[in-house]
Amino acid sequence: MRACSAKIGVRFLLAFFLVCLAAEVAADSDEAVTAEERQEMQERIIDESCRDELDRPESWLDRSHSYLSQRLCEPAAWFDGFFGDPRSFEETPVGTFVRLRNSLRWDETEGWSVGVRVRANVMLPRISERVRLLVTRDEDVSGDFRDGPTADDSDDRTRLGLRFIASEQARSQLDFDGTVRVTSGGLNPRVRGRYRYVQGLSENTLGRATQSVFWERSDGFGTTSRLDWEWLPDRDRLVRWTGQGTVSEASSGIDWRTSVTGFQQLSPRTALRAEVGAFGYTRPQFDIEEYFVAFRYRRQFLRNWLFFEVQPEHAWPLDEDTGQRRSDWRMTFTLEVQFENKRSREARLREYVGPDPEPMDIITLDDPIPAEAPGDRHLDPVFEQLEEDEEEESDD
Image 1 (cartoon, rainbow, N blue to C red):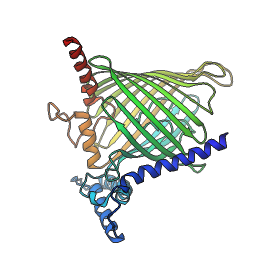
Image 2 (cartoon, one colour):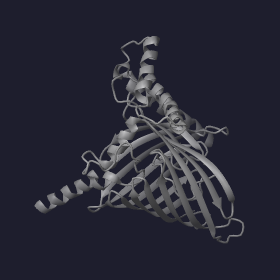
Image 3 (cartoon, helix red, strand yellow):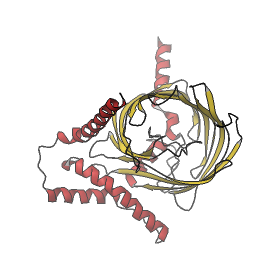
Image 4 (cartoon, rainbow, N blue to C red):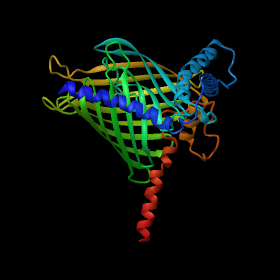
């Protein structure tokens, strides 16, 4: 049964990549392009997408960051130019956003450990505005790029793949992913379909339901259900409750997690985050594997692409050997470096300040853009639709 599932999954993965890459190209394949023309076009696309237009100071830090930003952008621009329509050269450049997180972690029981994480979300406009190139992690393959306590799993690995957004509207989104694990131990391919629906509950609260179906070589077929409740009083504050459960061929019962997270943006350069929660499983018996409470201080310093974080955490994990619950203190220090081109930065700025920000000087391209603050989401179209529905009911 598992061998048959693996064959089906691999074929699905291959089909997914072929459909995503070929669908947009086939429509305009009637125009022949020589190898020289293709190479010249790709070089121009790389220059257009990855050139550094900022007037950087002549320091080794800025020169190094600029060099790496360009080198990280070039493969995506080459990929987009190779598969994209040659006649779409004048379209918007590739958008690259890469987060490199270097963490030093101390655990009262486990001691010291270090880790490096890479996350990237790359827009490929010449292939399609619906396609994203992903570099992510096992635990956040959803692409939400949220870092929470207990996320440092030794079995967690970086994944590389594509996302195809089949449908995207104000209230709902349907997308499909195909990723492979980047490790010497095997690729461990994974394909996943996800549907999200958002419903406004009041003028500043909303509910979100997410259902995912996936196949992974190591875990077989499975499904994940997730519910979120969010309160967004303004652009700088967010409170979220999350409940999630996953079941697969490899799991015994349901692996679940629930937490409440509060986020406060103090300034464009400083933020606080607090989270309390628990996670566990339902078989062979219902057990809470760990309770935890964590606080995080995040601060931008020196450059708008350089951040540090300090996260103290207290956890009560269940000891597998004794069956008793320990009390552990933990501390994590993180240095984050962001690599981003102009197109991605402008897109993130629009997402935060909205199309018509008031006042216009909320934030500029030279400021760090808050990664978790709700920003213009507190004026979500879902809330506006809720108000319209209430007006229609009152008229009736």
